Length: 182
Image (tube, rainbow, N blue to C red; front, side, top):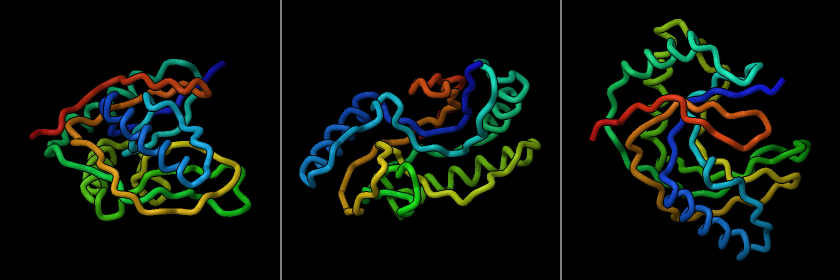
């Protein structure tokens, strides 16, 4: 039986995701790296990862509880951008996520994530188990690559979404949306 993952995320519009993919491809090629990117339709910044679940459909009670917590959050829209390409993981890792990060450029994402997690915990849902660093995963590679700085525009985060990702299918289904107020 197929499983799925559930997570809250910020997602760029399709044209923004394509623009990011074009810039990243050019950056990779300029450095002699193969730009085997994930499909731009799944580009996102995870805000909170609930985990892997068995079955194709999410538990509606769980989705309802997470949705109630998300609906309580009132947050302004904000600009986000990226300043670094990085390859994560040490030499022993099988797959190195190659990501866009932003340091201070993503501080607003961190604050939104902290507020969302506070609402989830207040509703009785589990707190995250690991440290959080906002990023957009571009690809996975068996070899690490050097990090380099880049001035890559992001987008205006005007909503966040609850996503169901079917295991192994590179497909994301948006289950719910919440606007970030102007």
